Image (cartoon, rainbow, N blue to C red; front, side, top):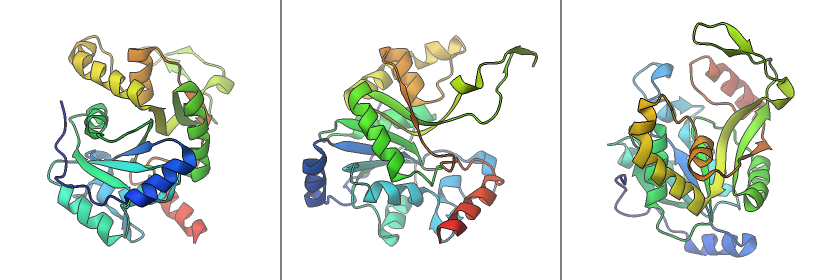
Length: 262
């Protein structure tokens, strides 16, 4: 199951890619997910395309990946029909020097990732999978993730929970209170050995409907890796500012962070 891709790469800045590869020794592809419906934000504009301080939301993480030395190639997933808009937007913003393909997303997030992985037809050692609804990913986090994935093959950006977490039963009663020191809030990027996560997603697609019947819902790529490879996933300290824009209330925090950066 492979998503539709744009006919031509947006740009192929091969000289810069080769220089970065020689410096790092690895090819790292960023998969930027911008294919969601964004229904919880309300309004007519999809969340990932809404204007935030003069730029569409999805371009902030693209900007980080575009300038990060670790990343050599980029794939972006978008809703069907938005390929040209995405291409024109990143050109207007002066971004996309590393963007190789724009891929149509799938019916669920995990299928969008699968489509992007299938579209990678260049050498790739590691995949950095990131939700573009998180505009504040930091290069220092990227460095830590890169160091860990080379050792452990699978790692995710995360932060320790500041709150006590309760596990409930189906009726909403508390059945367990895990030790807070062991509870982490998982973010993106989630980073994997490329062949490991590609194989895991291929297995996920084959068994998805069967899992759904059993009540198993795939919520992130770490779960895909855990379920279909058995490879342990390392938690890597990220930043509490790496928030995900989900509802209108989150924009208050986004604009506060942006104001501090000016």
